[in-house]
Structure formats: C-alpha cells, structure tokens
Image 1 (tube, rainbow, N blue to C red):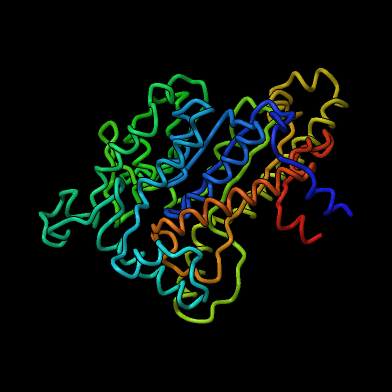
Image 2 (image 1 turned 135 degrees about the vertical axis):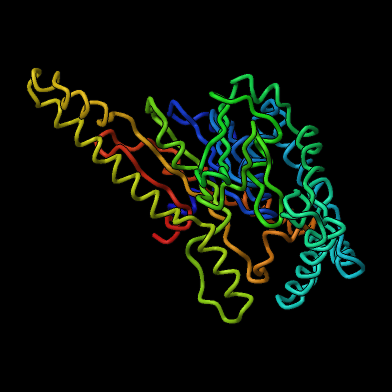
Length: 393
C-alpha cells in the first residue's frame, strides 16, 4: 500500500526542503557523468535548486555548468554539453548502432558495440573535450605537456566557455567547490569561489586524470584530477564552518557494492568501482557518528556549570558541539549488465542518454518519497537516505 501511494506522488513543485543549505555533491566518473545531469533535471522539476555545488573531475564540469547558468537555463546547458561531446562515432558499426530504434537486444551484442564506441574514444577522442596527441607522447621532448599525457584537452576550455558563464560563477550567487591534487606537494586542495576566482583552468585541473590528460597550471603550480586522492567531495561540505542545517544530494557514479566478477573484463570494472567509490559509505557513516557525538556533547554542555564553560577547555568543547542537522541523500549509478570497465570513456550518444535517464528516474523516485527530504530529529542530528536501501525494507 505504501509503495502504491509513493508511485502516485509527484516530485514536481516540491520546493526547497527545510534546510539552510542545499548541497549538490558530484563524484567523478567520466562518461558516466550524464547520470548527474538527469539527477539535476529532476531536482529542477521539483524546484529544488542547490545553494552549493561541489565536484571532482566530470563532477566539476557539471558543477561549473550548473553554477554558470541561471536556474531556467541550467538543464538545457547541461544537456547541450553532453550532446556536444557525444556526437555519434565509432565507424560503421557504432554509427549504425546509434541509428537503431529500438536498440537491438542482447547483452553480448550491446557489450560489443559499446567496446567499439570506447575504442573510438581511445583513438579519436571526444568532440569538444579531448583528442589524441600526434605524434604520441613517447615521441615528444621530455618535460613537455605533450610528453606526459596521451590527450590534448585544449578543446575543453572552449567548450566550458560556451556552456558556463564564469562571471556568474564568481558572482557568489551559488557556492562552487572543485577538488584537485597539487602534484608537487601531493596535497588535496579545493578551489572555492569564496576564496578563489574560478576560471576554466580550475575546472580542467579537477578533471586532469593522468596519464590520459595533462596537468593544468594554476598560479605557478600544476594540478591533477582530485579523484587520485578522493573521488567524492562530501567531506569538504561537511567540514564547512560555521555549520548550518544542510541537506546534501550526493551523486555517485561508482557503486561500492557490486557482484563478483566472472571474467577479466568484469574484474577490471569491479576494481574501478571499488577504487573510485572512495569508501563513500564508510566516510559518510564516520561523519554521521561524529555528528551524533556533537549533538550529545551539546546536550551535556547544557548541564555544565558556567565557570567551566568559560574555561579554555569549555570554549573548545563549545566549538566542537553542534545544534545543526545534516541529511545525506545518496543517488548512486549502478551499472547495467552490458557495461564493462570502459564505461567511463564510452562516449556514445545512446549510452549518454541512458545514463541521463537513469539519473532522472532515480532522482524522481527518491524525491517522491517524503522520507528523502524529511529533517532529522534534533536529538539525532544526522541521517542518510538511499533509494536502494529504502526499497529493500
């Protein structure tokens, strides 16, 4: 009965949920990033616009497009970007596949055709995104950008300028944070429009995954893809001070949970999923436990004598305590049976649309459930919501 009632609910026009901060947290995952576009589409339909968007790698590109457009144009800009970088390619077989309507059935055939598209991306690149270096890097002078990466990403700068207004990004209308790694120090850093003037180079640095893409220079330092250290920017959001009541829509492109692999292709795919999921649930669970401890500390401090609260130790504990609530809504892309380890660089138009539709459907189903947006009780302080776990109950 409850499931039937949920199916009758609409996600449209829900309006902003009862939190001070609405964060959209976007993981890296290459071609899978179209899933995040579908999630944003559903949020826009629900009239839930983020106040803060944080991204890593392809999540940074989506974040820049969202922050770089007014609400009424964001969906079209995201779709325009994904259409522009997934023009049909892959030769006769790949092109014929994209022309099929409805698509041919059969997991093996679909996996084969996807491999054709992935090979096309490896050898031809993706339009408006990256192209292979000719001559190849091992024939280039040591120390040059051409010698340390397989692809040229200069096209991406022009594409970003086409789909995102960087004056709007830096206006402060929406907060944006982009994760990258400083190559010299090995430190993980966030470029944030509260402290930095965000340029296309900051977005490109967040997605400069070696050895495919070259490092990006910013103010004399070179940066690589933030996913090398952590592929999920939730930690940056939850560590923000001062703390505010927050709901974070965490959109992951790699699932930490999966099936046992049956062949070497599935071994490679499962290895990527585990590596790039960045221990998402573990990190989230740790934060939730810490938030509950802060709530408990706040309750105990109310019983402490004033003279103790005014001590150095008391002031320190007061800073650590919290009265805020935090909700994390998980939206996780789960691979289809025909996908393989090349799914993150399989830039076919058909796969892009499928990823987008999957994100939209998952977000719609999530937003239809009142539990997804409900504030945690003040005595609890923090909760998570996962569509798949809720369905399992």
